[in-house]
Amino acid sequence: MPTRLQVLIPISIAAIIVGVAGIVSLPSEITIDTNSNFLMGTVQLDDKILQVYIADTDPRRMRGLMFETESFLADDKGMLFVFDEPGNRSMWMKNMQFHLDIIWFNENGNVVSIEKNVPPCITPVEVMSCKSVGVSADNTKYVLELISGYVDQHSITEDSHLKIISI
Image (tube, rainbow, N blue to C red; front, side, top):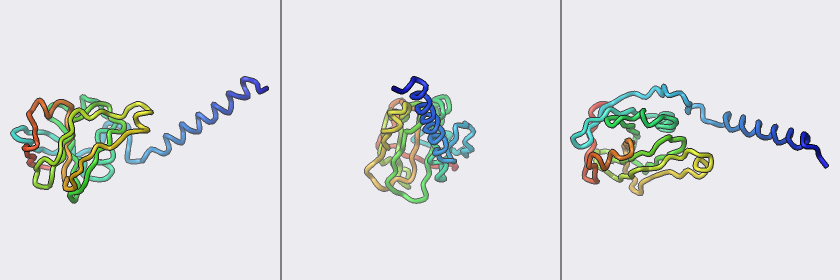
């Protein structure tokens, strides 16, 4: 019969290997550093002016709001995902720390879809099963992420309009 030490040593070594493999397998574009090097822009959503972090490259879109705290987005801030061409766009809530309202827009700034209070995937079980939130329409050019509750608080609807002021 194996001793306690003979059982614990292989288990400890396996745990260390799994931990190191997990850290090494993180994409290099994703860091926990809150200095994300996002450019800032300004948009108008109906009659509200918003300062937005611009996610206009694959690394920035992949990073998104991962690891940020709710205080990163004030009521007058959001993150605008800008794509080169219209297409079917889904948003992944992996490593998010708070709920979001998400609005998809076509290239003319018209609303394609709205999802409110989208939950984050934080725990290991949630991260493993984290699903993308998406729309069925294939004509999305911009996606705007806002603090949860913004859509209801500011009466944003399917008839709302996004105007790009500067990005």
